[in-house]
Image (cartoon, rainbow, N blue to C red; front, side):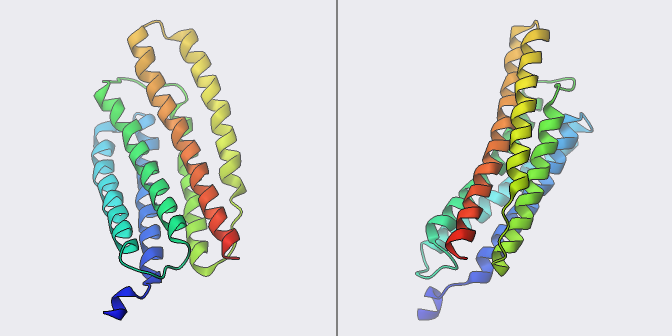
Length: 202
């Protein structure tokens, strides 16, 4: 019975690595979707990956409720898990709207925002690898990418309101651009959680 209460540190780190691996694939597919490259196929590839992230989130939460000892604060484990799951949810949400809203051509700047998200996810991946070996990763690149995303978002919204004359299309496109920008913000929020873990466990 006591063995069941002992920490399985490797499992948490393995779960984080698996989640970010799936999210990296999702981000890569999102770039292709917003470049309008085989949209339907890539959306179909994203859906099961988001479901896998949900399953891992459930497993981690369930394990947290059954173990007394964890590799770092359980609040931080939950926060990191939740934010990673949020990224996968938001990526899927942004891409499926292309299908749901019957978007028939590229949305200006959406591909650039998707590319930034992919770059941020790669930085988060590196930081999660560093968690296991307790090597501090300051993740300054994630923040600089988030600032770049803010700049692109502002330009995208400005041009959208200048050029799009169809009110319904404007609403659809703005919702997608908003969600992509919020995903960039969520990546930065995830980086903040990882930084906090590094600081607490330095």
